[in-house]
Structures are given as C-alpha cells and as structure tokens.
Length: 476
Image (cartoon, rainbow, N blue to C red; front, side, top):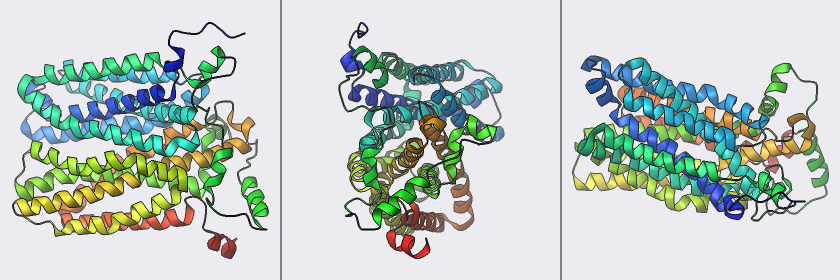
C-alpha cells in the first residue's frame, strides 16, 4: 500500500524541476564566486586596511584557499553522498556552507575570517558539483545526460558572465550591502528549491513503483550499450569482442581497505575513464585561461576598463549558451568520441588565430570578438563528452560488479573526482597561462594552449568511446 503522498509530489519529483534545481544550485555557486572575486581587493583595502603592496598576495591566497578546499573536499563529498540514502541532505548541507561563507565575507573584518569564508565556499562548490551531477544522472538517466548537461552548462554560463559585471555595477552604486544583498536573494531561491525537491527513487515509494517522467536511478546502462559503436552492424566477431570487453570490467572482491572505502579507485585503471577526466581538466584549464588573460589583454591592446573587458565575455559565452544543448544532444546520439575529437581539434586553429589580434581601434576589437565567439563554439562542443563518457564507463563497472559498489553505486564518488580534477584545471589554468603570457607573449601562449588541445584530441580519438576498431584489431 502506497504511503500518503506529499503535497505537490508530481511536480516536485518531475525531471524538469529536479534538473532546474541542480541548474540553479550550480548557477548560484558560479554567480557568488564571480560576484565576490572582483570586490576582494576592495574588502582587503577598505575593511581590512591592508597596504596596497599586500593586496595581490592576499587575493591570490584567498583564491587558493577556495580552490584547495574544493579539490580536497570533492572526493569526501562523493564518498559521503554514496553512503547516504538520499542526495537531498548533503545538497542542503552544501548550501548551508555557502550561506555561512557569504555571511562571513559580508561581515569579516580580519584576514582569517575571510580565509575561513573562502574555504567554506570551496567546500560548498565541491558538494554542489558532486551531488548535483550525481542527482542529474539519477534523474535523467545516461541516455539523456549529454543534452541535459549541455543545457545546464549553457544556463550557468550566464551566471559566470553576469556576476562580475553586476558585482562591479552594484558595488559602485550601493556598496557591499547591495552586492551581498543580491547574493542572499539568490541563496534564498536556491534554498527553497533544494528543500522542495523529491528524488525519483523517493517518489517511487509513494506511487507503488510508478513515477512520472523518464527518471532512472542511474544504474540502467542497457540504453548506453549503443555508445561503443553507434550505427555499427554486428559482425561475426562482435559477440566475442563484447564478451571480452564485459569481462574487462569485472573486479575482484578482494581489494585493499582504501579501495573498499573509496571503490571508485578501482575504475581509475581504465584508460577511457582517465581520458574522460583529462577532458574535464583541459576544459577547466581553457575556461580559466580565458578568464585570466582576456581582461588583461583587452586592457593592454584596447585600453578597456574592467567593465568593458567583462562585456567581451558575451562573445565567448553566448555561443556556449545557444549551442550547448545541441552539442549535448549530439553526444547522446552519436557518442562522446566525435564531439571530443572534433571539439578539441577545432579549437587548435581557432586558438592559434588569436595571434592575429593587434593594438588598434574598432576593427581589431571586432576581430577579437569574432575569434572569442569561435572559441565559444568549440567550448560548447567539449562541454558534455567528459561527463557522459565517465558516467558510461563507471556504469559498466557498476553493472558488472553490483555487490562491490553497493546499492547507490559509485556515481557521487565519480563526480567528486570529476569536481576535483575540474578544480585543479581552474587552479592551474590561470597560473600557467599567466606565466606563459609574461614569458612568451599572448600569441605564443595561445599556441601552447592549442598544442594542449591537439594532444587532447588525439587521446580522445584513441581512447574515448573505446579504441577504434583498426587499433584494436592490430594491437589486441
């Protein structure tokens, strides 16, 4: 007999509402990050009263505190989430950490309080990205993951774009109170949505096993078997190859204690999963490189203010917003390999063309905007393959070893690792690109980044979606 249904069960457990809640959560994280970072120097100067010579080092330290906390706590968040019966509780705890961080940043008058705030903000980011992506997979299933991730990433890119601009404008007009008031308003909306969601697996208990929508618990992988060679007709050797491939995902129950406590580690021997994580790292490195170098290059070439430099990101983000869902659908339909190879391969010449930009007026600004828009197209294409490929590989392990990974599977652990790798990319990107820009110039720096994309495209061709058949037949 079904339990009494909670009020609004149908829409609270619907796929659109759950996905929207995750999207708002990720949006809030990026928006508050972008909102706070531009005003950190003013907080340190006006409120903490640090001398100008100490501002840059403290800003760098606060950025490192955020990144370090996110990197370290992401795997922990994954382990905790996979051992709890529901994703909602840790999702709410993550938002509580973000609320505390925002309060401390608003009220803090000594450096250590700001450091604690940034650490809490990093912990919150680890939780929302780890739990949020796992919740999306639970909800939409692997067959719809690409287009869903593409849509979410397109939406949250608005927050990444708008936050620095809005933060600067609001700070100029109404000071800290206006900036943080805007942040608290978004947090309130986020909190209400996270509180209201009912996960698909919870909703089933109220409906005698029936729940609307196309939700899944993330363990269903049959529909993903088409990922290996979509459109390929079975040959005589295919059953043998498939049996060999399925056996490769079997793992022994006798594992070291550390692996039993963090079972996703056993999957990291798979080159497909390692390559998927590399895609996430390179994607984050590219995003952080643009964030770190576009404003300074625009100021040096065109004399742009911070607001004008921020507006340049419209050219970069708008194609992502428009093309992201389409690229995600293509990943669902044709697999991760074509998108990864084409996307990273396409970025190689486009990044190299950034060498063409020179000092000048309107004509050079237009060239720079066009090239940034072309980069945005490539960024949209590479947005989904990493997450979809990683989920597919881990689901194959989970299907082959259900007793080893437990009822929840290792999906939150996977996205904890993914969040950690992505955060590393966001940390490494600005440091390396800044050093290269100072040492060899902006144009040559982009050549180095293009070379990284070329290597990534080659590795994607070899490993993502499985090795091409001619390589398997020749070397295996």
